[in-house]
Image (cartoon, rainbow, N blue to C red; front, side):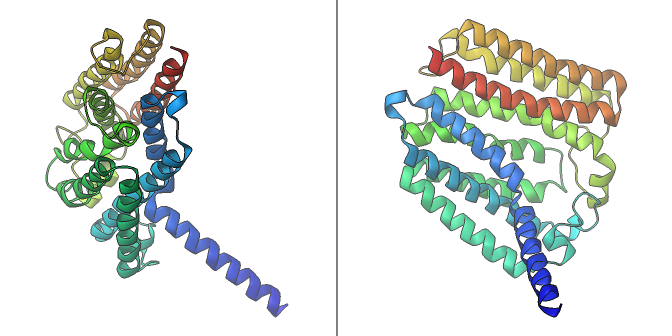
Length: 303
């Protein structure tokens, strides 16, 4: 009986450690970032240029990069996280994991991530390092100072989609620039929607996430405006002015219609001004960025 209880205790402890590790590095978010990077890579290579080794290195390096940023973020914001319902159970905020342990993990992830990305090429490693620096040293401190933090945070958040292209080509030009702009503009309706329905919780931590600082018509209108810019930049490659990054008319129409769906939810938030509409907008934004990345890749290999 005692042996069985000891085994159960050890299993529970191991499960808890794994769960804390997943929360510290935000596995779900990291995987979505890796997905964007892989999509960017596939857009840059033809069937003959596909390299599974680079793809795996990009996925692993990208995961380490995001995991490091999230771990550093939770170290810096541990006291503020403890005040919010959404984050109070995070490993560092709750005290289940020490700051030292989290810092060691974050540091190892940073070194490993940059080193792995460097084996692909120097530019990929450089953008990975810039992403970690901006997220940790600029975006995180600004969250309690100004709503412009979302703008700053959108910079490292926009890197993954273009990172795949840079990993495949070793170059930065109009093509990865457009991929960067797509994911850059996408973040405003996405994170402002989150900032809307979590407004009261964010307020407990002293975070300023909405552009006007309030859940009002002006904030909703800005969401609509940035959504329009997102749609326009998403279909711009159909113009033929974006180098090797191309988009067929059919795919451009599909992406435009998907964008209209996202815009609908933005307008609905403007009309209803409620948390339910904000949550619907957030979910629609996740669907939008995932679907258009898939459409871009499919379109590329059908051309």
